[in-house]
Image (tube, rainbow, N blue to C red; front, side, top):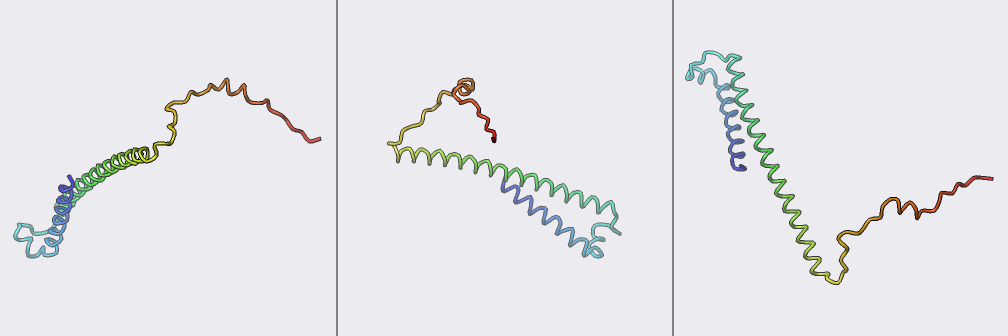
Length: 122
């Protein structure tokens, strides 16, 4: 997909360069293609084709960068996991944390709090 994106960008560049040269030398090249004058319809057609090529190239570029970012994120997660395993191998004497600690309910915690005291100035 990345190669296709590069090729499509080159095609887009060549497309606009060819039409730039064509319109700069229209007096001589226009007769070869049977065009007497440049009409607004022909300009709109040329620009729309270029715009469609640009949109396709842009969309494929976004897809390529998105897939690259997802690959990078997966690799970073894998590297972090490997770092954690290496750290665990290097430090085996550290106590392991319990996987799940039982949590107290909010009712039992509220019973252990001292009652609120109001302080007033005398």
